[in-house]
Length: 120
Image (cartoon, rainbow, N blue to C red; front, side, top):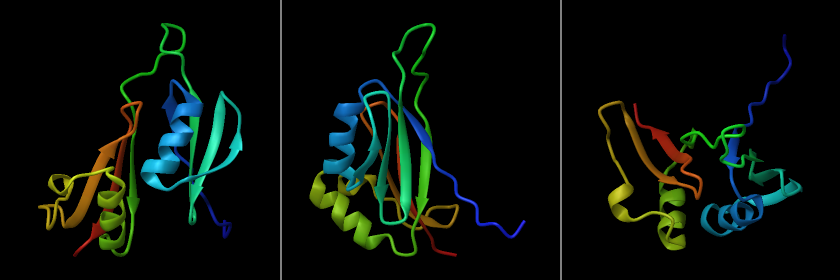
């Protein structure tokens, strides 16, 4: 099993076209492939997918998902997302009890996205 593995989170969306625009503007991801039901977005070597859920009993939205993106240096991301208006300074947590610097925000479907730097 020397094969390199990759994990790609698939987040629920109730409007793929709207969310592609938001991820491009607010998070810096670029559209890679897809249609109005399922798409892939990339940024550097990161990839996330969005899957349409209609919010009905047969196809519920649930309460959103959580992804954590670990980075070696939080500051460039912190500066970028402050400039984009995606976060405010109050969202930045430094020297947490669990040994991280981090910030998080919600997308338009209540999915939580955290950028995290281990500081141990």
